[in-house]
Length: 357
Ligand code: ASP
Image 1 (tube, rainbow, N blue to C red):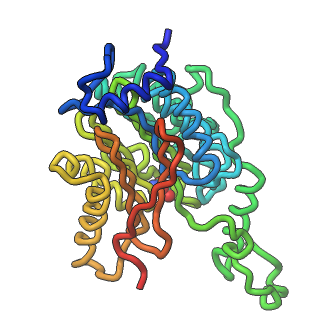
Image 2 (image 1 turned 45 degrees about the vertical axis):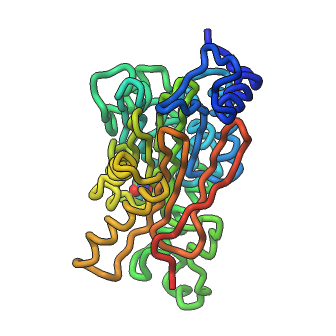
Image 3 (image 1 turned 180 degrees about the horizontal axis):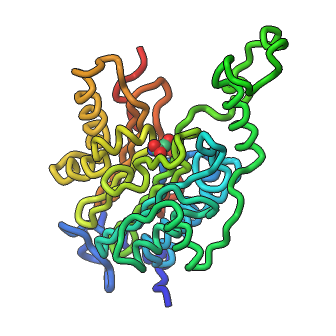
């Protein structure tokens, strides 16, 4: 049975620490290094209503003494099952052939275990399959048909992941690809066609990117994280991004903290960005500084090759003490992340490392 942590106990924990932890009885109370109290926390890179719901779902588990692994899985499932979200799980935008292929990774800091799936088709919650790879195999990454067979062996039901909305966006994208192919209105009407583009027809689809990172610290101080995505929209069939690559789209170290990435996965893979962020935190950088360090490192690598090139990336990180940070490579709108603690739900802003001039 799960151990229940009451609101009162949280309160005592907090007061106990701020009062120097000397006077109040703190039996059974856990401390991190240097007498700091463990405060459960869950974060996600998602900041919409679904992200908030996901945080409440995960928080309920943490509040009742559940594990970071369970809190993260249930929170990610909320986002994966949202049909309106075109970047994660069910409803995600498909590859260039109109097939939804999902990537996800899971890491458990407590047991130093990891699991992941790449190019998984027909399963709405790839994070749960990644968790099973982590807990019930001696492997880390399963892809394609093998990942699907594994999911089915565990009782997952195959379902069509391509929603009407995603299908229409995909078809519109196809029609816009080239005036020289046969997709779109008949040729004799083409020059009459108003110049709407697929972006204008689907203003709610802001970009080709989108992924979710969810990370939690539980009441034992153990850290777990998950990254889940439908990957770059209209990617080449079979393309695997950074999300299921441990060290790239996700990394968790129980002694230091964790980080997750969204954005152009090719750059995240080459830079091992999440691992880099965790190493920077180990070296004493705050989560915010570490996320910005990773952006700088990627920019530096391109400087000699193409000084005008900066990939779109967003990183989130949390350290063992529960401090958080997030950074965006470029743009005009400050990046944000969702944070849920005993103090409630908060949207926290980070920094743009190279703001548009
Ligand atoms: N990182 C994901 C990928 O490259 C996509 C994204 O985050 O937008 O597959």
